[in-house]
Every structure is written in C-alpha cells, then in structure tokens.
Length: 62
View 1 (cartoon, rainbow, N blue to C red):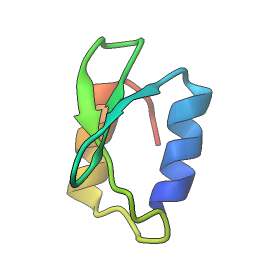
View 2 (view 1 turned 90 degrees about the vertical axis):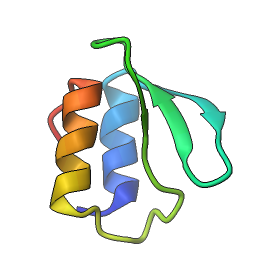
View 3 (view 1 turned 120 degrees about the vertical axis):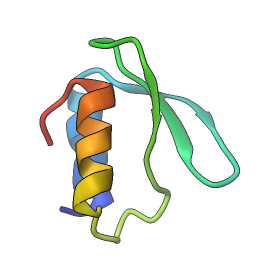
C-alpha cells in the first residue's frame, strides 16, 4: 500500500499532522494519543514492518 493511501486513511480517522520534521511528517492520533512518523514519499510502497508500526501507534487499521 502506498503512503498516499495510508495518509488518506489516517486523515479520515482523525489523525493530524502535528509538524513537519526534517525527514518525516509527525502525526498525532486521537485514538491512542501517540505521535508517529510516516514518509513524505507518497508514491512509495510502505514496508510491512513500517505499516504495522503505524497501525499500532495510530490505532487505525490500514
């Protein structure tokens, strides 16, 4: 799954970009209250381990 699709699902679930880091955008989840990173490269495929980490920290199934 590409990062662009992940970002759409995160926004739909209510996650917001808190700030733009040098290497990654920093998001905050309203479900878990945790901060997590994704990638600026929206056309790239998210690796399975990265996708799993984003799901755990955000509380959103991607």
